[in-house]
Image 1 (cartoon, rainbow, N blue to C red):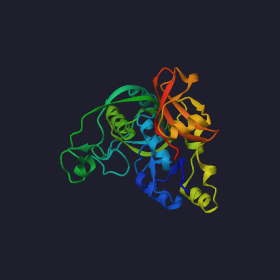
Image 2: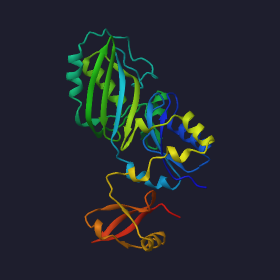
Image 3: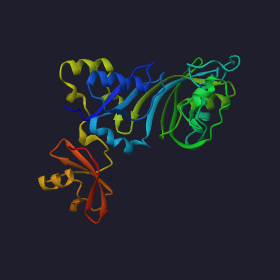
Image 4: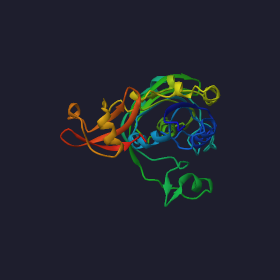
Length: 294
């Protein structure tokens, strides 16, 4: 039986997002699995996986806000901007106060032009930048507009700075740590990073791969899936009639009078079967944009 839904994984350190997807395919016996928002191998935390027909919802998460907690090590910059890289130059003396760091960090809040790290998946003429960087070839990436909604310094212990941040999609937290070190004049890199939220999916509802494996062995995977009514909360929901469900299954337009002010609507059969995301075409007429039922 096909498995359709969303499950939130707590990604372990050292794994790529692709590694997690591959492992989930083996555990769940489901080939159609995607993830919402890549995490660097050194990072841990929230990695939502979309399963089966729910992979069709990925298009609605391309600009999702993300939240993180982490630690920045002052005094040493690295070529990858994180602890997996090689140091750039000698270590610098760390002689800054918590207040000085907080003042510099506050300057990053807002809409910024951020240049992605050379060691990133951004492509240059079709080639990922990290491949060129590994070969010591020139990497010239254009700045992109991102938004840092929060960058809060939580504490300072020696050369380690704990922080929390909320950022728009496409923001490199590694770059924030690197640029913080540049502004302080002593260099810095990201020592650890944990993602605590992607869109509506939070760390509190995440599961380790071990927990997912145990649940699969016991036939309890449905218990771990995010309830469909909680998916895409910014889109209103409606429970369809049997007549409308039949129309949707055949790709036909339906009339939803109570949704006249909505651009999109989640259409359910009963309380928990999400059958489509419909888009308004005119007045109260909606056309199935993404069909999730058979």
